Amino acid sequence: MRRIITGAGLLLALAHAFAQDIPPGDRRSGYEQMGRETRAMQDDDSANPATFWVLEGETSWSKKTGTANRACSECHGDAAASMKGVAARHPAFDAKRGRLMNLEQRINACRVERQEAKPLAYESRELLALTAYVARQSRGMPIKIAPNPQSQPSLDAGRALYNRKIGQIDLSCAQCHDQNWGRHLAGNAIPQAHPTGYPIYRLEWQGVGSLQRRLRNCMSGLRAEAYDYGSQELVDLEYYLMWRARGMKVETPAVRP
Amino acid sequence: MANALVTVPKTARRGEIIEIKTLVAHNMETGYRRTERGVPITRDIVRTFTCTYNGVEIFSAELRPAISANPYISFFTVATESGMLAFNWLGDNGFAVSTSTYITVT
Image 1 (cartoon, rainbow over the protein chains, first blue to last red):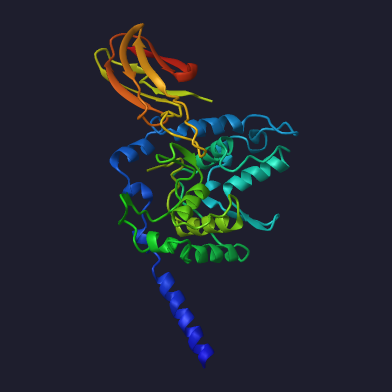
Image 2: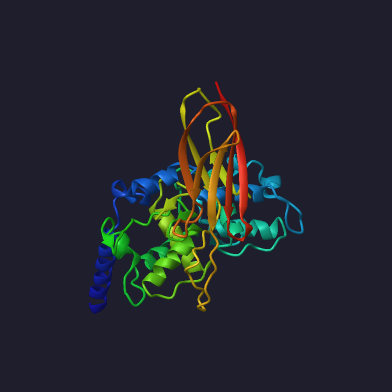
């Protein structure tokens, strides 16, 4: 009997936790909470400094590299056609490797296997540039994450991490981004945390950074130990966030305060 | 890698007011920060920006440490004649970037 009650209590607690999900009609990109000037920066490629990264990525795209002395363009051709929609469906489960991979990991896997080059370091300028260039080709397309039986465990793990209280501050992602979005934390508006525009040009960083850099920022803000770049936990969380933002439009390269 | 992005209309009517937008890639290190070990980071900023229209200076700016990275400067001018708009950024540590673009005025 006791076990049944505990079970029912747990179900109730779970139902309560997930009942707080933002209804699809109320979802807002962080873009909508930005000031007029910051929105203008994003709207105009000639005012958006992330354009430098995109152009650099375009150069890398057709540059021969690695032992194979091969450029991305030799296999993939014109990125405007071949990379269209790719960022909108990442992270994605890779059947061959049997794991979930985000866009940065996908680019590095290609580098190692096809170009026989060294993988680019996470958050290095070159990897950010290539990622920004590839993701730019999906701008305006709806995010399309469709979990399958193989990726479902990652989605569940990401959701669990999102709802778990962490750090000395003892807050979960959901407590700010589901339950208090639109309010202010110190002087800053709390967004709903939809990763629609990564890699982003963040004014606070004075440069371009990845979604994992942003997630790690939030974790250190909670005085939690941040997971390492490329760790399964962060990829799972990215996957959950992208699934949560499914149907919203890709804005890469977005500008955020 | 492109160091500067300049947006100027390709053509304009004589007497038309045109907007010129410029963006230059630069860290704009203020000189007021320190490394994790407390060592001061020396200043490294863009110092001046100038724009000439067929050799005549039409706009210039002095930049300061409080200006953010990758400075964006936009301004307006009157399209008087066809010719070359030249842009020039100079900064600390020998930083020098220049670019130019042709405008046809009818």
